[in-house]
Image 1 (cartoon, helix red, strand yellow):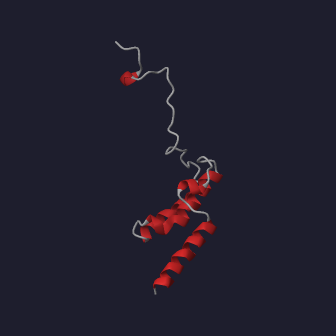
Image 2: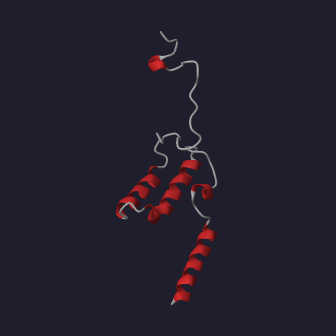
Image 3: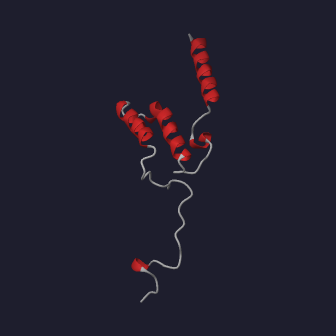
Length: 100
């Protein structure tokens, strides 16, 4: 018979969580408002997440502030800084105006 634990597992080794993708649940509901706003936006937009990015950003910021996930630059999570977004928007509008 094996010396491991149930289902052949080794009880002497501690599992190591993945670097990304797993974070504490919000048991105290500290970011419920932000979560509900994001989910409501998804429902009303036909689940088009690009239309709800501001709510997603707000939710992630709340989680970082409440230590429910590791703090990191939002640009690493796919969000541009506000000044970069405005410059991109102005560039897109300029391109559209040039075509007209």
